[in-house]
Length: 589
Image (cartoon, rainbow, N blue to C red; front, side, top):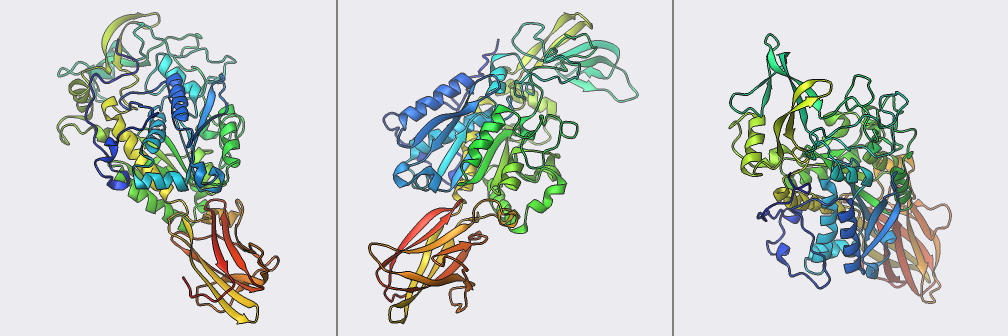
């Protein structure tokens, strides 16, 4: 039987995809530091192996990594969250943070490998690659490699198709017969795979190809074939005349989030109410407890897509034009980093989703959020366009580059209901996950896109500060705060819908200074002589709308007294920056 982990028999040379399009070719060959963990990315990790890899990484890099369980799945497995932060440069909660997760659907496994790759690459190259060092020092990352550990475990540890074990494992009555999980797939021939069943039928709709008998071609409507497709391997366990209609679980945690949620009769798999599953509930609690999260990346498979909301047409007004411009700026660069991936809107370019995860983080929390659908057949890099029909090309690739390891030979079986049938075909690794020799490139390119997204979180700085004397002991202090990144410190949707805290600009005396703020406000530009005045507590200016994408904000205080000052700009999504000044005339910086 084919090794269930589908390990490569030899190590292929992986194309080194450039971080931000062009990392120096030597960066992936940096010498490993003492205590590093050497993870391989020409294989997949089941839940137990993933857990051990996370523990090993946390133990090897204690100055930067913190591993915690934020809750438990329906079957009691830990939900592992890795925090990446350099505590020497500040608390993770005081920095712009990115939340990254994967594997919400149990069969969509390779996103977990991208998460492991992300942690490993950041740690191994911290101190070696300037950009990586900067990201780790100035940002925080919260990485949850598996949203659905039960589905992942079931997919690796039991016979499955490429599409089964998508759900969590809370028992569910999918066929509404009062029974739970009573009619799932059956490995009838005991080979460890769930493949397809074909019944000989003189009136069938399919005919086997003379050129390659592995291919069943659909015949024209006016012709009769030789076979009927019975679906995936299984029997009618509950005697209702159907096969495989009520397997383990049977719901969708990516329909269980608050924004745009609809009940099950509208959106299949939605659950009883938002956050009704333990996995989504603990993730929701974690994200709400970390308002510094300014970017979200969720990994799914497959199709080669960079997806953003809305999930439904009636929620288009949740995406103001300025926010859409930010999404487009990031996604268009993503298309360059990820060849054969397309930037798409969920409802318009894919299908309608009510209560999706990135819809909640985007529309409910005002966070710039993407879903990447990992892997597309366009990445096979085999043959030329039009060489063979699609199914033949897939078989040729499987024969010549994967040596037939993903194809299960068709064999006869005496089915208790249908009599003599053929069982065989593609196994569970054949369509939704990349060939293992191409996995590392997939990991690196998607990691590079996510780091580009992280690099576009707000980057705030005091670009100019000027102090002018107005009278004896009375001063005018003017400051400019600049955001050099694409993501604003407050998204337009958050500003419009009053989501989260406002940014705050403050001036205070330090080190025994006697400065007292008389009045303060915002300016339209640096040269403006009129202010929009602060009504109360003039030492604090509440900044409506924050600092825009690639934008600036201008502030002014009228102060009396003497001594040193500190300016502080505090933003939930942009972190906190400070600038020292003195009550003495200065030239603008």
